Image (cartoon, rainbow, N blue to C red; front, top):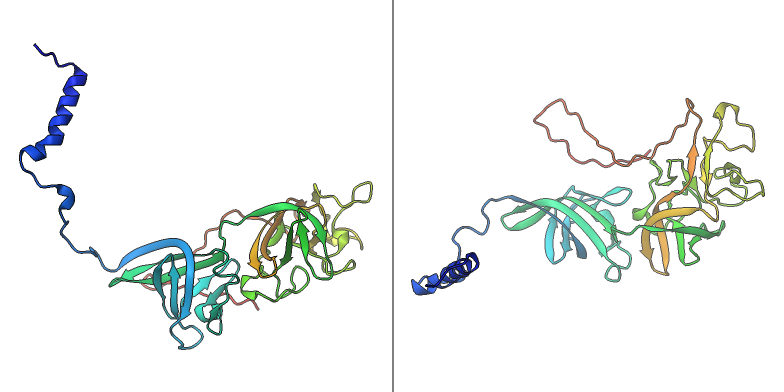
Amino acid sequence: MLLYTPGRLLRATLALILVSPLVHGAKNVTNVTPTGTTRPYDPSPFNLIGTISACNETDTDGPLAGGTITVDGMVITVPKNLLVTLPSISVAWPELFDGETPSLPLLGSVSWEATVFGNIVQGQPIAGLIYITQESTQILQGFITEIDYTTGHFFVNNEIEAVLNDPLGQYGPVYTDYPLWTVDAQNPSVTSSTGFPLCIPRNSTDADCPLTNRPLDGDGFYLTTLHVTFGNPATVAPGEPDPRIMAPLVVGDYITFSGLKVPGGLLAVYSLSANLGIYTAAGTKPAYISPATATYAIQVADPTVEAGEVRFNPQ
């Protein structure tokens, strides 16, 4: 008598399952074409993150005209009136172009990426929100090893040459080559880890970025492992650290930063945070914060009205 142990019984059962379609003449299910529509619902939403290969203006109807963007081979319609979000500002689609050329430095040599939310309508992807940046995961760190007060260029780890991409000169010398990829001039994007605004001095006596706003150690060197509370602005004496004025970056500061790679090997920085603990006196103004996340809401009295995206124009 042949005894079926649990292992033999399992193997026999599996063998029967595998051969039963052949025994009973069943069709190979892998060759069966499923029935139904290729678009079970229309419109349908999509969200993709990918590499930009092309951008075009196909609509020349005014300053809010539309066009197309190609992301990983998918050609997406950019409708009229859509605003594109860049690292610090939002712009209309035509503002991304210099003539017919998209203002994406080194496109094709470095990765330009887009996050797109939208709907597929009758087979055509149409964007509703677009976020564009170069090398979106780029986060660099290191010590400042040199600062040129004349040009505003600074070096990190003696290797990376960088400059604050500051068309308005808010945080240092003016740099206007790539204004779309600017620092944020209204909500400081050049700060200490505690939110205190920082700057690159335009010269050694820059009143808007005074070196006196960086305390010295007992040997006369700038403190770079800094944890200091500035005094009450109402009682600050001339030459003392003043919480109403930005503090300068100095050689030896450890920074985390992101920026735009541009021709010539320069990095045009739009976001920088220095590992410095600069605080203001309790109960006084100004007070600076560095939020990790923020949630915004728009209140509209009429619940049937949709609140569209708007562009903020600083005055």
